[in-house]
Every structure is written in structure tokens, then in C-alpha cells.
Length: 542
Image (spheres, rainbow, N blue to C red):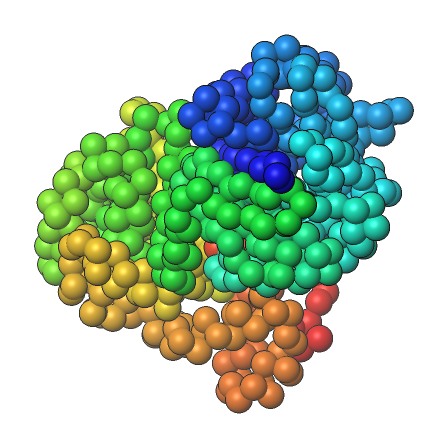
């Protein structure tokens, strides 16, 4: 008769730096897995004890004793279940990204991550030394191999485990979300499982940390590379699978959760990003300017879905160029979603500023300065409300605008978190339609009308920018795929338009450096994964 090894997959939401709190969470999951699911093993995610990514917290001298204290506590308090957990740990003065096995009160095995990513949002070589050899441990007669996140994207660690007779691979992850990531993970896992001839249990963390969103979506694949189980996306979960030692058969104890489609996954990522940024930083609520336009409407809907309407305050700040339909739609959406709504005219503020600036502007023609002043009046109001109430100001600029600088420093860019920072304008519309397919959240007229900043009479975005469909495609090629201007033109785009767009991207780096952070949902956002110099002689055709 073969033994059955039951593995519980702990897909949890950790707070970076909260080592005692994260340890509490791991212990609670272990008790539940042991007592309610009769699990033999609890598998947690990469760097679960510290949360991921800890960044320069890893350089603090006090980190090492805190990690050791957490490991001692886990050894002392865990009985009746084996724990596999991730943490940073020093060995002979070198810091490693580790996975450890705690069994019967002892740390019986450790593995150091071999493949340290140092691209896009990852900086692991800044902190960690790479391990050089995989290893296995035995439990209930089963040879189990460990790997950590990036390891599974390369063949060498798996080949080492195969050579050591691994029958089952446990893979600890802190894998950030971008649209389409689940399919990529599944493809890689299937390939590695077939190479090793062993099933892989892949556990990912859930939650958001600053601009990174972790979608969960833990996976199990068979030795043949077939999907056996998929956990929920964008929620915590504790799921179990049974592995038959000797036969290699692996089977889940609960049904798989479906993969969300493109719009659903992006929308839930944004909701998660807002919720965790607000909750983990202990903001009581959020406030945003609700203009009657598509960007602020989608931002408001996301905020309500993340926090509830009672924690979302919206302010309409009309001016002489604000269309009556904008006021009507803003008020209508506020009622639709149950948000607290107020209207504050910026006319008196603007007129006072212009009066005070009259001597400095004497003899100068009106230009975008007057338009930007309107945006800055609105920024002053929102920041005053934030200062008085403690509310976090959500800005509403989308990726298309952020890319080309179609925004006002210290105006509509003034705030603490930009929900749509990595969302192209064309996708904003798709998200609006997706959200309305669930329940009414955004007035249809907001979706249908041409976009406008309403900073001048009859103004529309397309007066200053190319068609958004073309703009977003050019930006994708230039920003996310590193095409040169010449290569983009070769794709069939107008040369003058391309040269203008890439020039705008390049010269507005200084603006983006001063913009709030926001959730990353594409393969390259304007944040930690795109670091260009502000002062540069680079030319867009190169």
C-alpha cells in the first residue's frame, strides 16, 4: 500500500516588514491545514516571513535577529505538520533567498535560490548571493525537491532535482502580475514537469505591495505537464492536493478555479492594488476629483469595489469650460455607487490667482499656462481635503497620458496613488464596459462621449494627441517592446506621428519621476521596471 502525502498550499497576503504578523499568519494557516484538512505539509510562498519584495529592508542590521526569532518561534510552536516556508537568511556573512523545511520542531533542510532575477521589477542580485546546488529531503518515503520562483523558469535547477531522484517538486513564488501572466506560468511549469518527470506544486503569494500586484493563482501540474489544479486569483486561499508516493499520481481535494479573462484580471489587479495600498498604509479613506470623464469614472468604480462607497469621497470642481453633462454625469455616478459627493467651483480660486499673477503675465499671450492653472487649483483643493481628513488622494491619469506628459505637474498629478498609471486609454474604455457588465457603475454617456480635459472651450484630447488606438499601439512598441522610432514607422505608422510621440515620451521623463506610484498591470510600466535618465542626449530614432 502506498503512502499519501497531503500538501496544503497557503496562498496568503503578507505585509512587507511585518515579520511577527506574517509569522502569525503562517502559524494560523498551518493549524488550519493540520486540523481541518489533515495536511502533512504546508507550503508557503517565497520570502513569506518578510513579505516580498523587502527591498532595502534586507540591508538593515536588525533583520537577521528578527528572522532567527521567527524561525525559532515556528520551530517551537508547530507540531503535527511539516512547514515549507521562504525567508532571507545569512550564511557565513552572505545573504540568501532561502526555503526551509521545519519538521517536528527542527529546521531540517534549507535550499538557497539559484536563479536571481535582475530585470524588469526585480533587483535580487542587489541583495542576495545565488545558491549553487539543488537538494531534496524525504517525507513519508517521498523524495521532495525545492525550487524558488525564477528557478522554475530555467532548466538547470530542475535537472539537478531529477538527478537526485526528486518525485515531487515544491516551488515557492512571489510572482508579480501582468496581464497574460497565468498562461506563461502554466506553459513553463508544464515544460519543467516533463523535463523532471515529476509533478510540480506552485504556490504564489496574493496581495499588493506598492506598485506590484500578486495575483495568487497557484498551480499544480502533473509529471506529464497537464494542469491538475488552479487556485483562485486575487484572493487568499488554502487548498490541498494528495500525492500518491510511488505512483506519482497527484489529485486535488477541491475543484479548480477558472482563469479570469483579460479585462477581469486587470480590473481585479487594480482593485487589489488600491485596497492593499490603502489598508496596509492605514488610510481611513480616499478622495478624488470626479470630472464626468472616463478616467475618473473608472477610478471611482475601482475605489468603491476596493474599499466600499463609505470610504470614497468624490469632488466635482467645475469651471466655466465644464460642460453641464459633465456635472450631471459626475453627480449621477456618485448616486449610482453611493459615494459621498460635493461640488466646489474653482472659479474664485482661478480668478484670484490670475489677479495676483497679472503683473508677471503683463504683455504675455494666454497659452497652456492658464489651462494648467485650472488643474493646479483642483490639486490644491484635493490636497487640502486630504490634509484635513487623512484621505489618500487618488489621481486619475492613464498610461497614455503619463507616457506623453498630457498632464499637469502639481495639478492633476498631485496625489498619492494613480490607479490607472499603467492602463492605456483604450483599455480604460474596455474596463468601463467590463465593470458595467457586472452592474451599473459608470454612466453610459461618460463612455460614449469624446474624451476632453475641459480646460479650454470645445477642447478634445484628440486636438493635442493622435487617435488613442494609434497612440497606444505606438507606446506599446516603444515603451514595452523597445522598438526604435524607425522600427515603429516600418509597422505602418505615420512618420511624423511616431517621431512626435517618441519625443514626447523621452522629454517627459522628468514628469514621470514626480508622479505618484500606481499598480503595474503590463509587462513594463512607468515605475521600477523602466529607469531612464532625465538628462540625456538620446535621440528617439536610435
